[in-house]
Length: 214
Image (cartoon, rainbow, N blue to C red; front, side, top):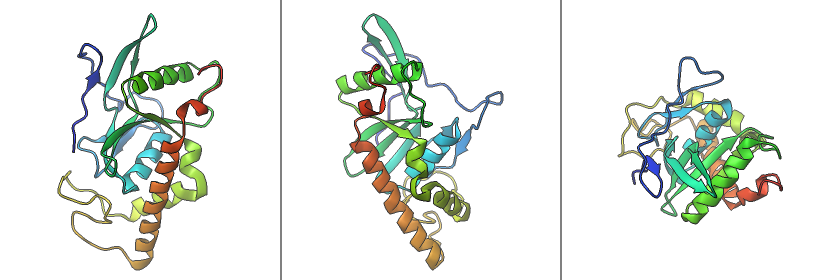
């Protein structure tokens, strides 16, 4: 799988994405045992963990990288710095897409987050790259998140990361099949997760931001 550079500017930067898992951090922070991530997939909120679960199950997602790279760029006279929450490699399209994961209502007219994301979207478009926005409402629709949580509790735990496995299988390291009812739920979850990703990637992220910010 292609390696994702650590930073990107007109002149290469030595800045590196920050480590988001800290002992003193406030809120839900941790590491998600992804079979699609070379390094530990890290999250710093409940909704980011939910996003990692859906990306892990979606068959079209071949690799996952959290806090993957730093973009530093000029926005008019202002220097900006932006790190996407997640980068994913889409196998069918052989492309890398970036995701920003947010709680519902995170972007308001006075929101600094909305202004920051709007600028990042413009910058990535100029580079020919894509940034998509994922909301909590996307992840909990049709009880998908509850279904995923139950499946992950039953799924065999990931062993050491390997590149020679099919991460969409129930137990790719050992080849153990699930019971028939769990297998049906697993296949249904894979279909739902791919459908959700397609819907997210069809949306224009500008349409999700307040009009005054665009």
